[in-house]
Length: 438
Image 1 (tube, rainbow, N blue to C red):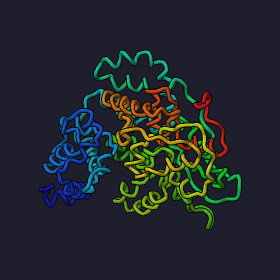
Image 2: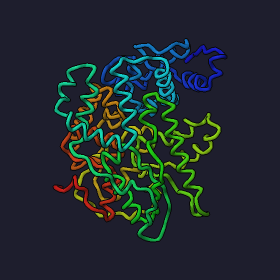
Image 3: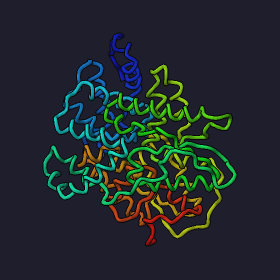
Image 4: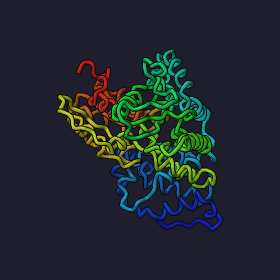
């Protein structure tokens, strides 16, 4: 794609990076076939190619974002299916990230939109606030259908409907400290506790700690870590996202520096693939910060999805189980981190029969806060995803992202678990409560 940025514009490193990305696009349109919003809405401006044109025009002319740009960029799930499909290697992820920051800095949203976004940014990344909000949501749930009838209140209605009917108490898995292995030590890792996941489903990290302990892995839960920054990063709130990133980088570098020669980590384990995609991008996000650039790059190099790490260990093959598992590959897993076979291979080796739903490349509609901010498109994508999963006639669904678990569970009676919960059970852990009747 031909561009005409001025030398003054290209002096801005963010603009210079976006210009390089734009120039790689050859207008081929391969991305339209795998873009969930284009497949759903059929509007060229709701395809990656269409958004690239809008973003180019906005940045090249140095103008503030307008309603048209905001509408179509907001509809992007950041699923990155287009990145997987693109034959030219267009780095759409960082281009749309730049566009969102530009929108946040130059566009004044309507009052209700500002309110919902401000609420999400102030609540979701903080486990205590999030837990309190979910308790209050129980009182508001009866009003969700009424809110969904009013356009400006639809996000609040969607948020209330997504809130779980019951909330688990705080888990010991999030308490800082070192968990020793149950056998001879084979490795040492840190683990991200996160923000939303330990509130919505603390059993995921509990299963991870149990499994790693039995496999001889020492696990450190560092003190002071928090949200990875993904939620606010995708809303264009870059300074808040970078603050979260710096905090976690400081925590993990501090832990690595403690003690003697055995103090380093083999990996930083991530059990929510949405977080993993962002943490693996810390090196890029903080590349212009001289104090953090090298440290962030080191952290990114250590970040591993739990299935990515388990694939490096010698796990014994298990006897076949009479359980059919539909594997849903989260977009942040298959498109963001390019992890496609590891989870399925682990499940197969653990004795499960794995089934691949049709259209596995398409997003389920969760996408961080997308199912709240774009509830109508999200609902269509969820229905499509659930139909494809249910067509496999599976006994259980496995996936690697808490957002997908919450989204899909709201549309089907098939139990859905994190992949590591099934692996923990297969290798000697307790049977997941969701499978009590299986």
